[in-house]
Image 1: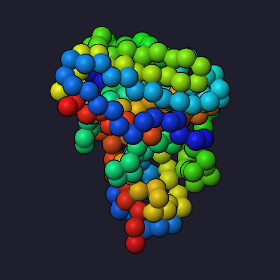
Image 2 (image 1 turned 135 degrees about the horizontal axis):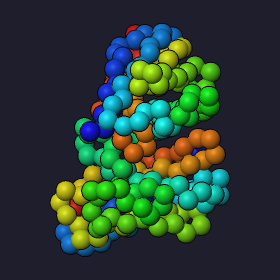
Image 3 (image 1 turned 180 degrees about the horizontal axis):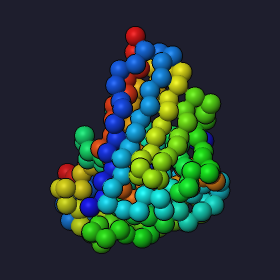
Length: 109
Length: 112
């Protein structure tokens, strides 16, 4: 049950786009179309941003999009805004279990 | 409005036990698989355990297998996590989640 691999940090200026990767194996990310992305602001509970690789819950801006290729999933945030600065975590099915990535701190410059 | 409210956290000595509860409202609790996820201070999210909608199937992370037990009472709309043989490394905020919605978390501190 090894954690999925995410870059520790990412950054971009307001209005720019940034992509965060999430690399697993054929036993998790590559084996299922069940990758989710969560946003977490300091001291707050995580918030679901993307589910089933690319679906957006109601209320999540369409600036957030998800995709997957092989064992790597990606979250793209377009038109960066100050409020997007947060930690982002990917999560994948892994058989009966779930596995999270280590998290990526997104900084809006 | 969907609400998940955890309770039961606190300070416990190594080797001790604690039972967390998560009260659900605003959605059909009995239809959802539920999970516990923890976050050690300053660290990332770690999946702990899940239970299916009727409680007949459970799964655990290797780090807690044999020590933690997840359960639910659909009549009371409540999820539980019984934690035994606690270790210092179990210190974390514990969240209950339906994957879509999350509680605010409850802090468990294991220390002598």
